[in-house]
Image (tube, rainbow, N blue to C red; front, side, top):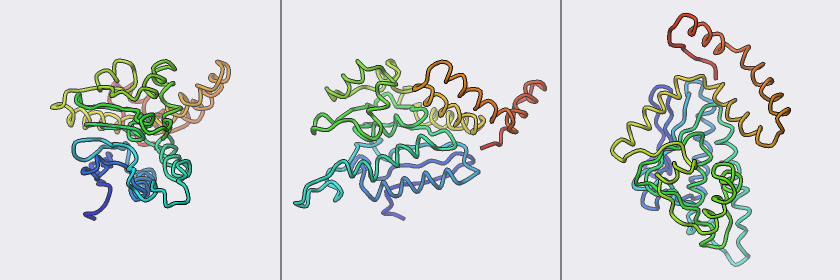
Length: 263
């Protein structure tokens, strides 16, 4: 529909979900949250989808929460921002981190506030060189949300996380790559092709193993070495009995490219 807050397109095994409020820098409304969560669930349920690309229409990725959305307007009985987080951002962040396929964020222009942290929730972030990331929460008296409090120190360490969150400075994409906040920064002219190439590369890899890799790395952060080794053994036991492992070994021995199908 023309008034949809999302554009959804599928090319082969790649599902592209584009935030579509360009006049408002794709800032979040309750309607967008509903459509985005449904689109992610649809992609998760579609066995033909092997990678999801999350992008933004127009000149920015996502400016965070639209403060003019009715969900964020005090009607005189007090505004419960926490309820907005619980109702919208919590399920969104958890859905992205539990997708059965890799999720690639393609960041053009600004990614601010919850928009920045939505991108960081994704497995890989590719940004155009002109893009930037802003933890804008301190500017309106709030703390990082959409998983930012969990993601930032794990990605860049406590010192940088505090600096980014407290000062709210604009972080250029090139610097974001340098400090390990994102996977890759590419020149603007090369950005669309780089996103497409990486999406196709991810789609050709064993989706089930990639999703398990995300889970193991996330969970290992709360474990000691012995616990992490146990977690690895559990994952390898499950994956080792799957068809993709047999196909990978057979392809290696035959010196051919594997064709992975598990999901």
